[in-house]
Image 1 (cartoon, rainbow, N blue to C red):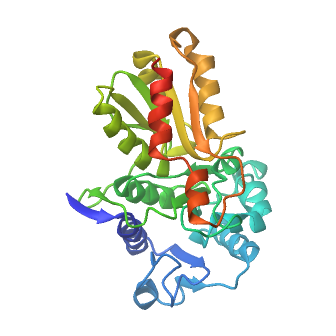
Image 2 (cartoon, rainbow, N blue to C red):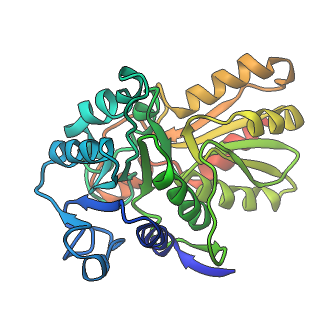
Length: 324
């Protein structure tokens, strides 16, 4: 298999789907001539032209409103938000219009659109541009939320998202575009709403996704040096949430931690822990712990920013705590 970056995997998925289906088009700020803030659509404007690669004003409401309208009349728009933090400016369209139209019109309309958004901290972009509000969007039924942690998953899940008839928020982490990984040659898709065991182990279960996967894999390597084998379950999709691999793993290890970059309070970890307690309480041998971002607006200063974000030693410490 070829080893490519997350950026290349996402670009391949977009280009393959645009080649396959003329109804697919991209709109967003600087996606055309500039090639996107993170260069994901570099070269697309020259290949597909202004009819299918549309630069927009800095107006997230307009981007999402246009995408919803186009989706309702048979197109498959991919709306790019420069950062997920700007999604707050288009909140009504994302959570109150796109996810509900199909239901409110009794299935007469579909809204086959993808919202690509960059989330996460670690790039010194300050408190208003570094948030991880994934749980906020996963709260709303009707909106699917996908957030991959490997190039292989990014490509396969994005292609499935583009082909879906439902609105999907596709969250990419800002520090992961240069992450390399093996990606299968040729055509493939990965079903949305399926968690995956990324590493097998027998001593404890680590549940995570996106950037948390990268950190958890490094933590698992550290733990293995001390004879502790962690099994890592990658959620990949936050809504719909596939708990089956999580519960299967937990019933084997009886101990778990949840790793996420968002804030702990009301977060993804809270949901996972609640479901384990509800559905596998008889298998609990130790309190389930959460590793998450410190509960402060993310600082600009690099040292303070890194101190606020979850790190590999935090995961290692939590793992050892549940094994006491």
